[in-house]
Length: 173
Image 1 (cartoon, rainbow, N blue to C red):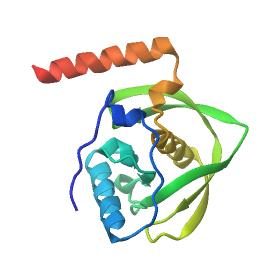
Image 2 (cartoon, rainbow, N blue to C red):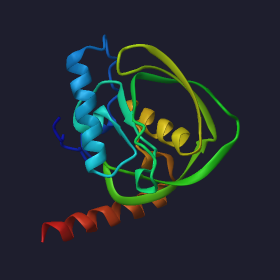
Image 3 (cartoon, rainbow, N blue to C red):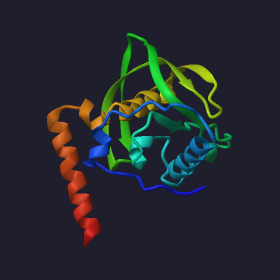
Image 4 (cartoon, rainbow, N blue to C red):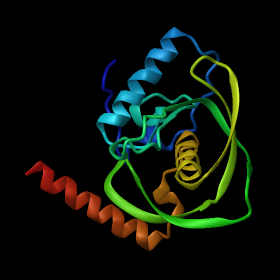
């Protein structure tokens, strides 16, 4: 496995709509493994292929809490699609590996049903709520060229991006 480079805002690949995957094969499974390792090293709960420079509809997610004794529970989603969502929404803080060290409150559906192909190419569906529902919506947004900062007010986005710019300037020193 190999750790991949995570692309950060405002890299143009993050704004592109990702292409569907034609088939799940050994090459794709190696990429899924590399994505998962990259996500774990970066201490994330989700990672979409565009975030590592590949404009394909691929996501890895793990919302388990190994620090609390839970076993890791990675999900590999190829061509994921939200096929249903609840009417009810909730506002929660979100962060993103492509917008480092920044967080903002984002409205998301409380429940979603997602259709996808798994690590072996088998069709699956998951009905999710809680952190998994948020992570699924966040990562599928990445596949459509949408960042969580696109879902907050312009004023909040400008403030967040100024903080990010300041952080980057400090890191350069």
